[in-house]
Image 1 (spheres, helix red, strand yellow):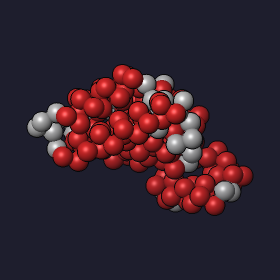
Image 2: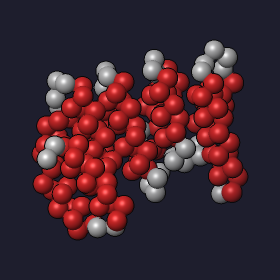
Image 3: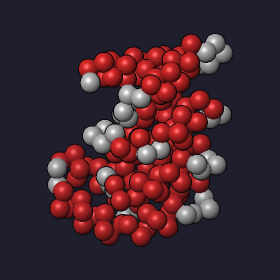
Image 4: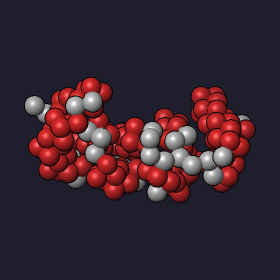
Length: 165
């Protein structure tokens, strides 16, 4: 079984609520995941960063920070997907890397990475600096339509959450 296969199995176990089996799988694959994240091959690193989320591996969140700073857009995207998954119920995951997410959303050269960073910010606390940044992205001419629309939706959602607090 490959790391990608094990990660897919882990995602299925998590979906079924089989925490014990998921914990066993995490334990069995922890070293392989770490090794893959250090690979010279960006494809192996991308699989590793994506696997962190599929395994629901909260102990490896620091590994995702490295993925967010990776030179490969595929690795940054995979790390963002995992971060978004892990942060759905835990905004602290987003809040701990918020400045990095702001940078990715505002300045990454890859539009897909920018969009994923914006989507991740949706799961964080509704901080004013994030809302202002997203509104600026939404209004910026010259950016692709999908990025602007996603930023506008996330900003509106964060503003609504801020008002209900």
